[in-house]
Image (cartoon, rainbow, N blue to C red):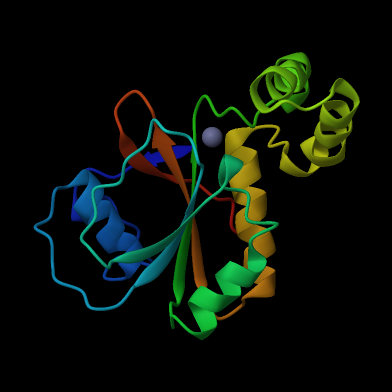
Length: 180
Ligand SMILES: [Zn+2]
């Protein structure tokens, strides 16, 4: 399901010599940083604090959102393509994501808003039930694959790759796709 990238030879031909391949080289293979004066790609990744990418300055636009869910960030994606001229996007999921099984955190979420933000309970409950279905990830890998397919349909000329970040080793993996 996950493809390890430990040398440039591990990068599939479709991604080699593209910004997607370069991302793997910088982060996993410690390629020396090249100078950039404009963004080469867009990275969509989770807001989770346990992840840090090893990339050069100016290399990428980054949108961070729970679960790397870009469903409510499409205008920003379009901006990066139209104005930022990027033609490559990666979506980076990760293991142990807090957006998996959100419903199980219902009480914690509602209580936390009441205690931490000063909301009343009803408002906090409504907020949770209005938005949780939109942000629920289900399974991290399946979600990234379905988001990848969805964005490919919206932006057919842009290369979009599904990636995975393992918290334990801080490395990026390519998610294997069943291409028809
Ligand atoms: Zn996450």
